[in-house]
Length: 561
Image 1 (spheres, rainbow, N blue to C red):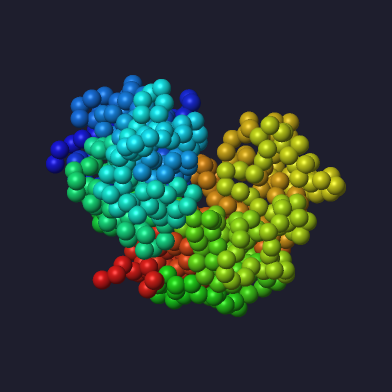
Image 2: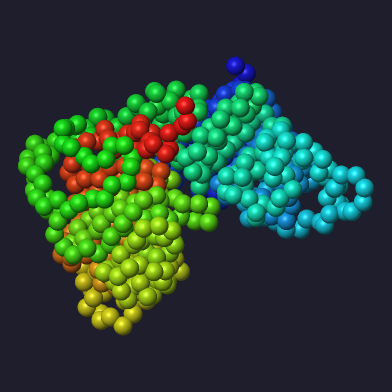
């Protein structure tokens, strides 16, 4: 196979910050290569570096022997490099055929390589249609773009039925197809796909897989980045795994799925084989269908690491959060489907799942930030309705969002005082007692703190409000390996001391299950597994299967024969 794109010892990032280090790989014509990795691994930064939107510090990128490192984005496109974005960046004022025609004759920079959020990507600044006989054209000082070319591409990629419609009138799947078709209108040699399956329902994902193979069949080299590991393994010839900016595994899908380094990257387990061993403890739900979870009184399970018997109570405490067969999502379509989940006072419930499973969507739904299209959410004894943060805080809810929950320009003292409101100084002192390192940092701004210090501050800001229910989204995100377990152990003690219920959203299953009472595994918007934390920890094979695409999908998600 002919190598089209070659990446050698590439180090890249944003500003002066290196995010990707010493990455090397090649893409061959007619093949599909997958790029997977946990949240924050550097996948989008790598695509940005290849296409001219991130700084290259070292290494080389060449396409058919031509170095791309010093070329602007539009010049890279003219050499045969195309991409899609996570957000469907379309020209909203142009119809589908016109969106495709933009690439047929690019101006200074082609639409499909326009920076996200720029006028080029939204259609701002485009000129009106020029009337008269013949095919419509878009005029401008950089030349006209013939719409006839876009119509031909619409027919070529199955978009002819929607060719004269505006993007705002299309379904999410149709918009995604337009974004893909526009990237292909420039007849690229290399196509970089950044999360093309985001927001697609199961049937549309199957269609996307077929389109990707069709594109590769035309001789295009495809790099596929997606959270849907099952899709990546099904469609790709080889897979690269990125973790903390470095490639930690590569090979054919079956090889990568079995690699201990991949389990370490996704589950937070050590790659040396010291993860808990398999046992015969039964776990509810191995097929992916949503199941209501019943309270279990006293469960005695073996701890594989030590062999000691541990008693865990999973039935104590009032119900603070109940999701009953909830379906919710965004305007593109549902993300959660018939999810049932319960959090009680004084317990930590771990919500696990790979990137893109719907964990943050569940947090936002539970907090009343997203509408529920089916089912019911009961929050702190009342049926949940959409409300502002202050109203939810008064009811006893606090949220620690992914990516920290403090104001960067305020000092630690100011962040705590603002969160405490009219509460007494004693309550701030109590929180500082839980986080002693913050006492020495009171006069530093949050922006000057390390990742671990900022995450401690985010927890302190949430806890100073004395919440009854705490929703924590990806506490480990961006932290050094040893920091997250210490913070989780601290959270375990606080929950027990204050009877606060905690929903802990976490990608790294191993560390979360060590402190949780119960756990749920979310897989593509559905509860795939539910059990006590001890039971889940005793069956890492089942948890791993949900992360790495080995579970059997429910009936409505299976491809047609």
